[in-house]
Image 1 (tube, one colour):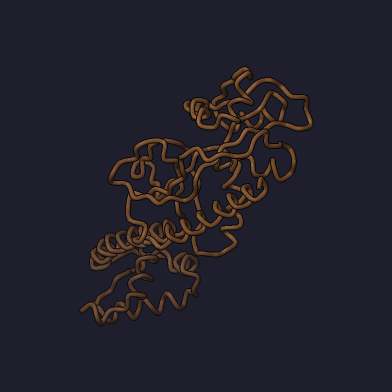
Image 2 (cartoon, one colour):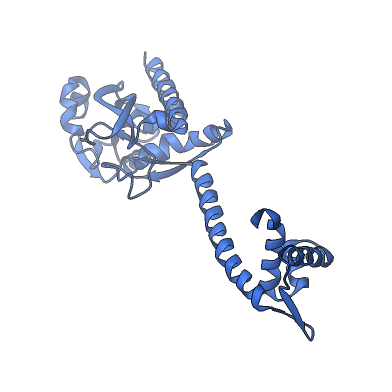
Length: 294
């Protein structure tokens, strides 16, 4: 029976029955009233039964029409749900959710995301700022950029992106302030400076001021509150524009940035594309500041 029935006719019938009017159905379907009437007539002929009866100026369903309408309500409702699910999946494929530490996001990554989007890979990066352990499923995160200063678990896939370099910077346009600005987000940073005697010697007599984030340290440094010890990636723009200057050459602190994923990278081509782009960009930054200090 189904092969003899026009699915388009069922759709037109469904709209007329829903709105109780050929005129309203035609408006919703963006067709003429005559087109709707013709589809209904063809459907009734195919089924060999009347689906509507005219009572005065109104169309009402016949008993057979009521049965068909109840069936159409179920079918079209499920079809709607299916199409919405497919649309949602399509939209998800156009967005790759990245979790990244706040300051490296603001100072290094965000200025480059517009450039990434212009490459037209067919998806965009949705950025969430956070640090530490990653709740991939709970927050619907696809990938995360983290330093390897904590255990992320043996079940997490990861790939090294770039080594971390730290640097002491100050505002050259303001009188020197004998204060060193440190971030509580890296509590071991000051102790790590013992590996770099020349840098520590320059800063050992400074009073320490601990702020919550590197972003605050950078802003404090720009305001002349003191010398900030930060990741060099975070002050790339300020150094290029001579808003800040290095007190000492940058040093590798032994850690590195890694891209994390709960699933293998090869299973999602978007992750590979972004990983390769990210690695290339961070390596370009690294080459730039190392050559500038050579």
